[in-house]
Structure formats: C-alpha cells, structure tokens
Length: 295
View (cartoon, rainbow, N blue to C red):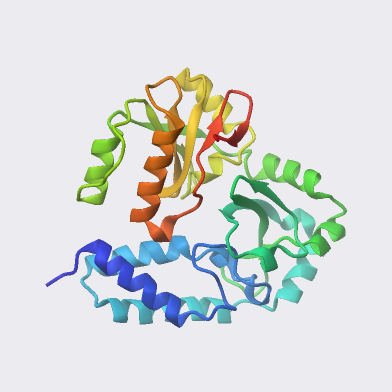
C-alpha cells in the first residue's frame, strides 16, 4: 500500500538528514560549507530533494531506497566538482565570465557560514551572494559562494555587488502573480486535511518570476513588489515568507479585512505543517515604501 505523500516525505527527509554529514550541507537552513561550496546548484539541497521525493513517491519507491539513490546522486555531484580554491581563483581572475546571484535563506544555524562573506539581514532571514560560471572540464555551470576575498579580487564592496546582482541577475526577471480568492479553502485543498487557520478575507497574491523555480526572490528584488503593488492596485501587503508554493511568499493585501495577528497565525500554521519548508517565522509588511517587520 502506497504511503500518504506527507508521511513519505517526512520519512524521506529524516533519513536523508541522517545520511548527509553535518559538514557537507545543511538541509533548508543555508549554504553548504566552505569545503564543498563549489557544488553548483546544491548550495541549497531543498529544490533537488523536494522534486526527487515527489518523483520517487509517484513511482512508489520505498523511502529508504529513494534516499539511497538521492544520496548517491548528491555524492556523485559533489565528487565531480573542482577544488574550491581553484574555483575561487578562476572567479577572481575572470569576473566578466561570472553571473552574480543572491539567495534568501534562514538565519538559523548559519553564523559560521557567514564568516568572511558579504550578506544582508532581512527580518529573520539572510541574503547571501553566489555566482555561476562555465568551468573547463565540468558539464554545465559551476556555482560558488561569494566571499570577501573574491570581492576584494573584483574590487567591489557589498553595496556595489548588490547593484551588479540587481543589474544582471534581477534584470531579466518578469513580474507575474496568481490571485488566491479563498485562502483557507486553498490551504485545506493543498494539505488534504483540516488546517486550523483564521478565516482571512483578503486578496492574496503568489508572486511568480519567469525562468525561476522560486518566487521568494521577489522579496529581495529592489523593484518587484512595488511594481506588483502598482499592477494590482494595492497599497501594501502583509508578506508571509513561506516555502509553501514553489518557495514563493504569500502577499496578503492590507486593504482586506485582515490583521497582522491573523497573518501570524496563518504563517505559524503553514510552518507547523511544512517543517522542511520553513523560511521565516516573522510576518513582514510592505507599506508602499519598503519592507519591514510587521510588528
């Protein structure tokens, strides 16, 4: 008998966390350690693991067998990457070949990983900088974490780096959104069972960025939410930074009959049901000028 997906998913992630060494990566908490941070797109394992888990569940593969295959693929990927020192040196000497990027991750448990690298705090989250480039002998692109040493080699500071990221990484983004008119019903349908959430009556938007698997970067994009607010004729949004739908935040229109306390209840309920997708425990507010903590 096939396990319910939520049960399967919990078993899968618990087993995977047992197999993956702590010094290799942190599941859904932050980037992998400096020792292995040249491992391309695996500065976060979440996207790979989620997709792989769903695929194996559909095929009715036993959770332990699915984890063994997932770990095999992850280990093989890490093993094929060049030494990080070589990657750093090449990146510093070939700045024009690098696509600078950034990522929004949880603050929890990443203090050591932030040492010696540029970052910004955003509520109880953290913006880190990464890069991708072609590297001889490696199929596809190689990813790496941008460090202070690399910034010095590029002769830029953190603010200048963010401007470069905004121009190259954010420059190609196209704004889109989906509207949820009945959020409680949508969540009950998503979770497939009863979820104790407040009866929110407001427009809710799920921002989408063309070409990206995650809409969560809409929070970081310097012009995304202001442009979306103009497009949707909204004065502002309560922002729920969840990993619920493709790692996209829920934007609750402040014009609706909704309070920040209700939004906090909602975020807490989602995070409790989705422990492996928790990005933040704090509700944010876009007030038409900028993003800040809602309380």
